Image (cartoon, rainbow, N blue to C red; front, side, top):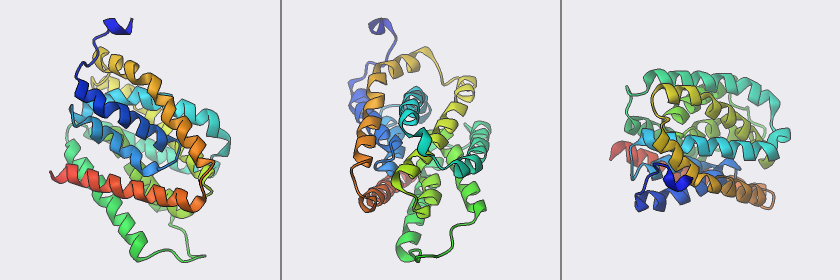
Length: 253
């Protein structure tokens, strides 16, 4: 019985956790994708970042399964094969540096890089037919995404900085991101357990929140199929801006 499990009882936690789970579900679907990295900082308003990340991991895995069920066939196979190994390297780095770099330092770094990317896109927009970013840029973004995803589930902005300028069809972009992060999140299970983050209280709390996990994904997939590509990318960049400001603020506060 869930009522007998040692779940978190603080009502303020659930006041931020419920919208955080829905927001990250929307992000998992690709709709307003930049907002997903706000979920762990939101939950961290009521608890340490590592605990918030541990509670969020099972929810992310459920969201990944929901998204893959609907999007697997539309992924960009070449990008997945090229980027996922570098992202897994990033999770290894995150495991080794966990506890050395503070969550605040990682948040500030990710926020600063996200805002720098958006400024570059605004001040020096790509010209039609211009060259795409080199493969090494994608590899670097994937490693950074794997690392920041491991530490605070904030891997969205780094990989979005590489994927968004490719201007793929929205559904292909969503599917590619879904497969990318499914692989990254699966790779976190053993390291999180080894670091002592997976305990009965955190997992019981995740179980209470579990029914909410698919709702944001389903809502986001429904919306992605019904909005124009122009609006889709505007929302993605708006999400990255909000995320960048929030993470930079967390790093400097």
